[in-house]
Length: 171
Image (tube, rainbow, N blue to C red; front, side, top):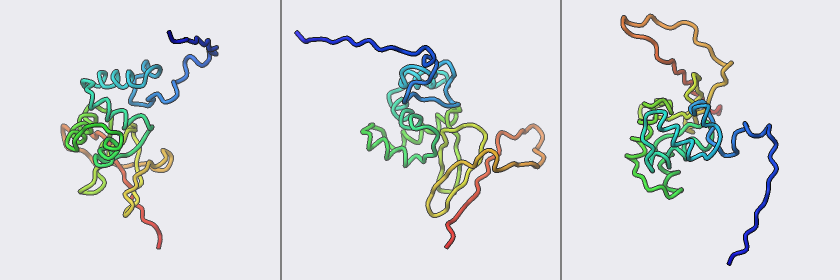
């Protein structure tokens, strides 16, 4: 029979409300789910957003949200999934990204006519885009203000304002 060892670990009570290291924490997670098993949190997050937590959504969601706020294309996520041996097609990645966007878990950013990024930070913020390097990153909140917007047609309202400042390296 195997020899089992039991270890007792002392826990400081002030640490009980702290997020678990590696847990998926962000503005897209309901506050009551900020502790515990990260996969369980993701399942709850998907259910809360009205999505069934399928194996593929869990796997792709883990790749997306476990690394904090980031900007990815479908192709980038597909490559990550392939390296992680997640059996999904590129079409499934596209479908999942669009489902997550419609559910409010991601923000879609059309940077070029041919390139769309998905942002895990769904708060109101703007972006820098480095041309030729396809690098997209957040503009600090204090760095930009949009003061005057045009009048919107009757029956319409402004959903969001996306500003993308295009950069290039100096020669």
